[in-house]
Image (cartoon, rainbow, N blue to C red):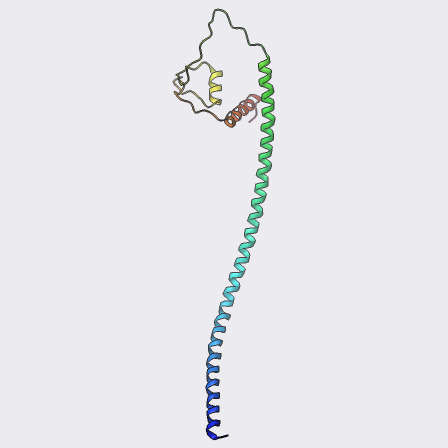
Length: 169
């Protein structure tokens, strides 16, 4: 081969070797940067694992709290059903008893109009009004309008009245 061709091939090889050296230096820098960030990535992975474990524990606690609330609610529902059955029995017993006789000289008063001012009629009425949510103000006059009660509120009031009559808390 001619000396010029041989020199040209060697020059090409030298240029390729120089490019390879530059590429290896850049690659080494990037690998060093990755090694430095590897510790941070390990810390992030550890933090993520810890957070997922805490989340699992929280979910388990929430499930336990939900089950406890469900048991408590079922007990309250069973108590309410029992109370409703006993109240139904009490109301049917009261309906079966004859009404007390009224004296002939005392006329039966007409029921007041809805929203009319009604004077207080003794401690029994005041207690009933208090339990039914229509407590009278100190002046002895009922408020002009009374919010209608829901069935649940009325049942709760009746349960409270029965418990207070029994002497329970």
